[in-house]
Amino acid sequence: MPVFTEMSGQGGMEPGPVVTVGTDSVPVPERFGWWSEMVGHEVMPVAVRSAHTAAFRGRAEAVELPHSQVTAFDFSPMTARRSPVHIRRHDPENYYLLLVRDSSVRLEQARGVACLQAGDMALFSTSHPLACEFLDHGCQTRLTLMRLPRPVPALAGGRADRLLAEPLPHRAGSAALLGLYLAQLPQAARTCGPAELARLGAIGMDLATTLLATRLGVQDSLPAETRNAVLLARINAFIDHHLGDPELCPAAIAAHHHVSVRTLHLLFQSEPETVSAWIRRRRLERCHADLTDPRLRRRSISAVAARWGFLRPADFSRAFRAAYGVTPRELRQAALRGLPDARRAAQSDK
Image (cartoon, rainbow, N blue to C red; front, side, top):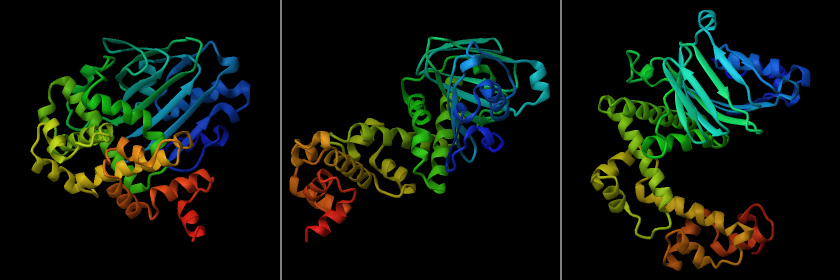
């Protein structure tokens, strides 16, 4: 399905990996009608109503991935209903995972009813009647949809239908990772090349499939590749969360995830870096960010290094220069002078 290709004439489409459309460039009297048409074209035909038709505002950011699509929506409160007539008219035969980012949503489908708050997730299908109320709390509704193909890989036979309009766990495991993924993907995709974007898409599908399979109790039927990809995503999130711990090392990571160190290294064989190189690079990136942050200019370089797990200043300085071509002090001086490139600063000082 094309991403907003036919809606760009009025909606102000932006080129790039993230396609953005919105009502700002549409004449005010036509905004609600334009939004209704866009939703019917890009998600599924529905009947929509809103108390805000006279001043309706909406915006959508879509990331098209090899086997899915992730779209972040921001719109005035409304209701949407999908009837058997809509389904007969057009059924794209997709599932959608819905992540509520702000406000509240009441979703009814099949025999399920989900009352969702910010951070909650639920599944719905384009192949069944649906009622969805985006509750009016005096603010915009913000949510993200992830389109999944039907049937969902490893969940054939309609098993996923058992989860329609059921609140899904979202605070731990693959669900927590998926929530972060959905919330952050549009921003992250802006700096991705095609290969990295495809890889991100595969990670998202693995996380979503694992979440649904776990909820259904059939996670053991998932392919080994899917289970390994989700484990790797959990490990990477764990590393990012513990970068400041000087004891972070392959042995500690393996122990926390109940795998052997050998298994850990095997997981990273498909990655561009070893686990130790990944830790070092992420630590250096955090140090780079701190050293160029004017709010932290009074924090010593050694304190910045220690904050991210570098306890020996000489080792830190050597690793930093190898990674960025300048010393930590040269980078900070360049940042404080307002120069965008530390290499220029280092060259001008010679």
